[in-house]
Amino acid sequence: MDSDVKQWSEFYRDELTDMTFYSVLSRKIKDDYLRENLAKLSSIEKEHSDFWKQNLEKAGVKPEPRYNKLKVSFLVFMRHFLGLFLTARLLEHGEISTVRVYSEYLKRPGLEENFRRRLQEILDEEIEHEEIFEKAMEKSSDTIERNKDMIYGISDGLVEVLAALAGLTSIIVSNIDIALGGLVVGISGTASMSIGAYLSKKSETEYKLVEEEKKILFRRQKVDHDYIKTIKGESKTSAIYVGISYIIGAAVPIIPFIFLQKYIALALSVVLVFLVQGFTNAVVALSINVGIFKMAIRASLLALLAAFITFMVGFSFHYFLHISII
Image (cartoon, rainbow, N blue to C red; front, top):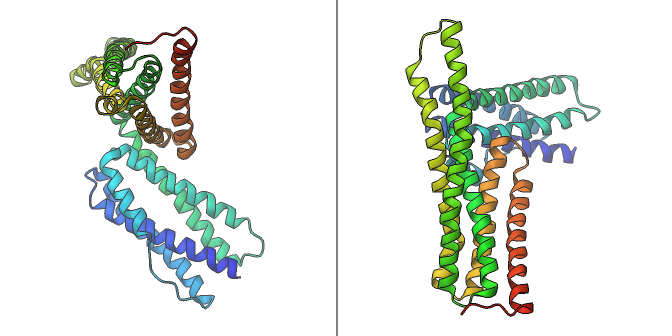
């Protein structure tokens, strides 16, 4: 029974936390669909928390109505950086976690029938919550594409330029010269990535335009000039976002070399890239609904592996072939 009471207390606090977060967020979101549903979800979470409160009181425990203030503050703060789509995805992650925990708890033997039936109802309602967030995300396709371009641009800039800087550190003495070498790599990478993004998106937009023309010709649909204009601008927009985000990512490992001795600068660049790469890939994981921590750590470690390989290549040139640039 003690283990039940402890778990019920955790469920109670989690439901209070969700209730508070949905309530706060509903007053800050401009999207009508999500705002209205968040307000409804908050009231439903209140009912769920009352269920756990009543069961705790039956067990002789007086629960304290405390929610996780740190979690609520963090999620509200992150909304400014994640935007509507990723905020909805973040909420969906929370609902999936709740569904998983409640599903496991329902498998426990010896649960009282009324308790089991009400918990199943709560579980069904939590599943419906997840569907609400899915619909909210379906309305944000443009945001998804923009976020994807920016995240992958930053990630590539981080990895490629750090790897180049690590290799240059082995054979170039001056930290400023190393920074200039990284800048050249960053500029060439920006041009390459922007052109690649433009050509890739251009093929996709041309296909969309052909399909739209078919609808107009064969199905007698009315010409949607705004939609066609949007499609035509997608390739240029994608190239701009990828290019800007790439150079931002490239700047992260370059900046320490402007001010610090080369090995100190390299160490700081490695730390910065590890953190930023982890964050950007956590956002990617969030957007595609996979394990956030695992994907973030894996991406960060792979970035460091690329830097280590190029550093060892440069070191080999310096040590065995005595190549050094003063």
